[in-house]
Image (cartoon, rainbow, N blue to C red; front, side, top):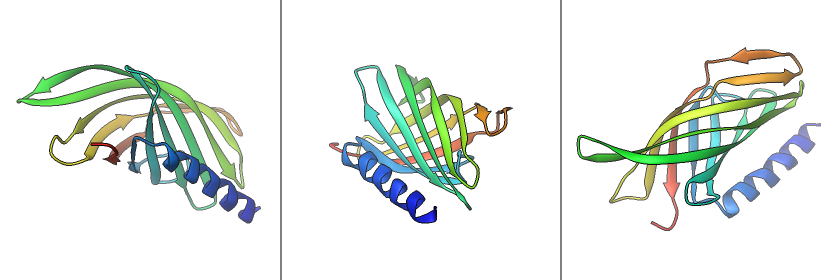
Length: 148
């Protein structure tokens, strides 16, 4: 089982990094642990896929959220972007989990270096193995921006 999880994880990681426009790390409360590989894929002018693969003690967590980007806002001369989204999450390990998460966040793209930094909140509704609702999904995202 452990080898199957590792193989599945490597396939997902390869797929995520192959076409990612932003690739980095999400630190905070994630489905499978406290740190995740974080990737963003454009799906139009005002939407994107925000995906995470996290590795915990005995679980691999996968989140795939469809975010809607909103008009940037200015704060003290700097431009920030905010987004909301939702999508499924699953955990593969000793226990199997499946559910849906929402997301609201804000991020900043540095103009002179290819780096994006963001904060988000992800409440989640788990429907399989147990049914519960969590509101403690806060995270810090640090991503390299390709093509900048």
